[in-house]
Length: 227
Image 1 (cartoon, rainbow, N blue to C red):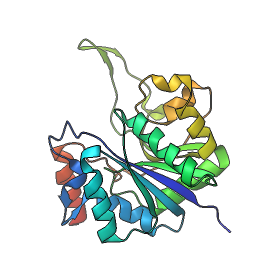
Image 2 (cartoon, rainbow, N blue to C red):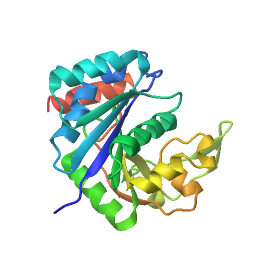
Image 3 (cartoon, rainbow, N blue to C red):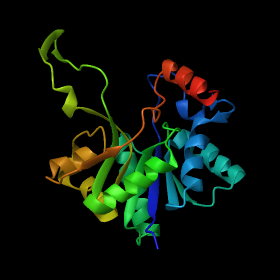
């Protein structure tokens, strides 16, 4: 029997770059957060879901869950000041109520176009390596810049754009989020393991697995949904 994973959906951001809450913006008639949760709810690989939302959206998220009847959503909790704080809160919730969880997928609520194939690839990679994150090779030439001046041009063959889900051994990532090195800011969960000397592997994500961050992303998302 195939092992399953728990999921922590991170949906507590302030959406400062968007200027409005991107998770609650309708995409072709269905809000972003609902589209994201649909994927995890319908996946046969997921056995439980913890949603970490903002304190301001807590009641609305719980009401949405009630309306949608997502039976895999076992907890909806308020997040912290930083993304990594919100993830830690979600992992703590799993530790208390689902201590049997062996694998966990951490996913941005603002990535509604993740597919079941990506979830499957992520779990398979994590089972091999204990820590694996979705990503795609960069298409553009990347310049390292300081104070407006180019410092270096990294070899594009070695550069990947990182996405979610990021899939881990639950015990490993839970401990990393409670390590002393977690006090420093981390833009993703893999960084915490990298700081502790653990190897993190990458598996293929998708170029359509975008994070809704700007108005241009919304336009792309609407176009994608309408074919």
